Image (cartoon, rainbow, N blue to C red):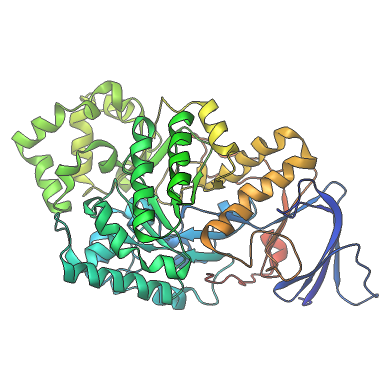
Length: 514
């Protein structure tokens, strides 16, 4: 392919101004050379004459996604590419096998595989190891977060108490090493284990290398919904202790509670950003949705023992989350192969097919599947008005929280960016596309320090997507979650066409970026 290419005749949403402008975009090698009214001599470069009404946007950045499995296996995530996503930020929720030693990989392969997939063969696998494994194989860029829960397991296993001084020092060195190998920040997942065992002071201490590196602390909070204020306050306290800016993963709650926490963060001098997707349902490992933390606290073997012990099992069945009413709103995403026909049903519906109480049935499912079950929770308290407010806030970045494992994944990995595009374009295309470019690209680039990406300007990386006149449209649904979005005519990564695949000639120009 010619190393010089001109995208001619489109509107440009550069992620900088307030309105779109008619302009050409000249690509030279992996970078944008010029934006404006550009004339090139015949044969001076390849030219794509864009269809009338086309809009050139910066390649979108997924601020929160669980894509390390498909990237390692295939080097691409088509559900994201079809939406114009050129960079995926992985290592989320403090629980990635990137950065893990072999013992931690073995643990995560049992505990978190319905989200991230399993790493095989089991081995030590640092950020540098991931970079080497995907070199020359990526159709998209990937940015990697170090993971606090992973690092904690590396140094202390499933020990529930505070880390000792030597363990904290070892964990801090692992954060430093990950940053030196190109990590763009540190994530935690305070609903998950062993990430949950880390307290504010401990996490602040191991996060201090972020300050010198200019990178964020990113957290799946300890509380959302009615507890979101406390969750955000803890996030800000860690940021203040570490001297780092902070980012909240998949944030939701009442707008008044969120705004109050953000105002307090401003007063404390801690910059806060967040990501969220436009769906009411969440998705994660089923054990986390249903079982108390103390049941999981000693690792998978002890959790499985609790599920089969008559006394402990009876105690679990007395809990609110194993009632039929609750389980009507919990849906199966990843199940054992022999039960694939149940994927997509609610737990209550699946149990009814066996004529069993849903609580009893789902505990049996978890035990039979060795906990390898993923599920979706319908959060009835999360309203469309809340989602619209969250998406409209200046601190919002687009993050799909896409999970690509299992028979019936959540549709957010295939439709979140298209759904958000519809929201921003409600104001009309002239200003709506600039809002879209900021929320879907520029804001995440700023949050993670990806200075060469997220905007269209001379010298920036040539990560671009071209949206056709009909606009970006989501087709994935809860019933058909893998339907690809439509409306993106072209996607360029580092100056090379990667979408549509039929015209991309198998190019793999993606990089591990920082």
